[in-house]
Image (tube, rainbow, N blue to C red):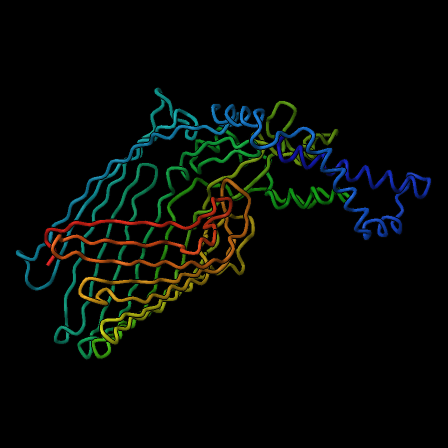
Length: 493
């Protein structure tokens, strides 16, 4: 039984129990709010209703571990999506690159040039992408760069300029200039500043995905998918559809809540401008400090939007307000892969983010080392529409603290690391948005070197205390990992 079916059985039984109790108490089928308030505030009565409703809903479910459950599990795994859980992805990736340093040809400045080529050969047998033997999908990309740097002011100031050009099959060429400056003083201290531009092509999924996930269809942002599914015809943002649905449930249907989806355009590369300043310094050959701040400005930020399309009885897009039966209008209340789409699209608004990091590393008594680093990353969401799935998926605060000594003795060393990250909300294509709780872990490692054998023995663990956590919503919980290793190095002193 699917989750929606189970919930429907549970909710229907629970509601029926409430109405039956209302009828028994008042002798009338008319809803009595005073009696209902009293009933729902009676823990014993609510518990009895819950047990009764749960038993009714569970009647059609197979128990995990039973033969029926295992048979259904095996059957689903053997079927291709959307009928089952199986899909193919034998995609191939080819890459070649090269660069040349002109240090032997040019003396007045440093210059490096390079180029690269890559190809994505999508092979899903039509389960993820619309590829087939007669319709192979290959994405070719190439690029080249030049970088020039020179030192000034008695080598205290180093300026670096670079430019890069890239071209991908489905998009126009992109030029990305960058400039940076590093000023060194007192030998072991420097300030740095940079202005960089960059771009991000839509992923292979962002371009070609065509995936039926039953409750919706997830599609890439290329023109061909808009043409095939006519996504921009009589479609409405899912947020407005939900608002309309709530008005229907409340008994006061308000079609005026529906917001047409009119921002369609073929997807294109995302562009970013990055401003960064930083400092790094070494004090007394013992304390290293590194800190920086960045500010990003994104244009054409790649996100996803969900829409639902009004359709006639034949599944064709139609004006829901021209249908006298209102079938198309109220058809918006129910979503599936035929009328609900999740689309890769560029945000027309400017998106900004900022962040900072601070780290220190301190060496003290007999080569003991203590360190910490903290990072702060923030998407500036004020003023952004809630129609888009931004998939930023980065915790705002992350902290790491380390303590160890690689040479506690000539042969023995150890290291301990404590990690913590803040809670955040995960945005995803495949599952609903959900929380990723904060978590902390402790890692440790012991090492012993057998000098005569030129071998190092390492014994350690990650998440030593097995405090289970997740790194993304809907993902597996992660526990402890313990390991032992032997490394032979013939170059060991």
